[in-house]
Amino acid sequence: MNRALASMLFFVLVAMSLPLRARSQQQVPQRTVERIQREVRHELLMLPYYNVFDILSYRVDGDAVTLMGYVTDPVLKKDAENVVKRIEGVEKVVNQIEVLPVSTMDDQLRLRLYRAIYGYPALERYSMPVIKPIRIIVKNGNVTLDGVVDSQADKNLVGLRANGVSGVFSVANNLVVTKSR
Image (tube, rainbow, N blue to C red; front, side):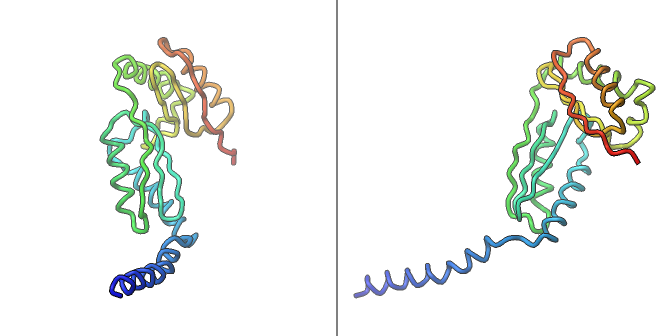
């Protein structure tokens, strides 16, 4: 009889916990999701080692945040995860950020690309903000340009400048042209 009572009590407890579980998996209010998105963006941009050779992106699904992108420093990957975990309302962080391989050739290529793009007179205005709008991702000699520019002409010019750097195997120009005012 004790076993029957114990198993009956177990089923009652399980049945009582179901509404609690269903409530915890309910949708997070849209205002909360928007607040989390703003805070994640802010925290990622404020990371001290985040530079022009890294790109971070994220997706917010309710109370879960997925981090994506490429970084040159493994510390930055961990720092990004840690700052997002501390945001109020974030219950889960999935860190899919890839740490780029250590390569002297890629490091030299990054510097040459930076000079070719940001040092070119027609593109110097993009070097003014602290957070550079053009991201230069180099992985094994392959270059990906990401970010925003003001015009299609600037996008083409950045692509040409990157293709003109010796040692570049390929260039993927993913720059987005912002709508002109």
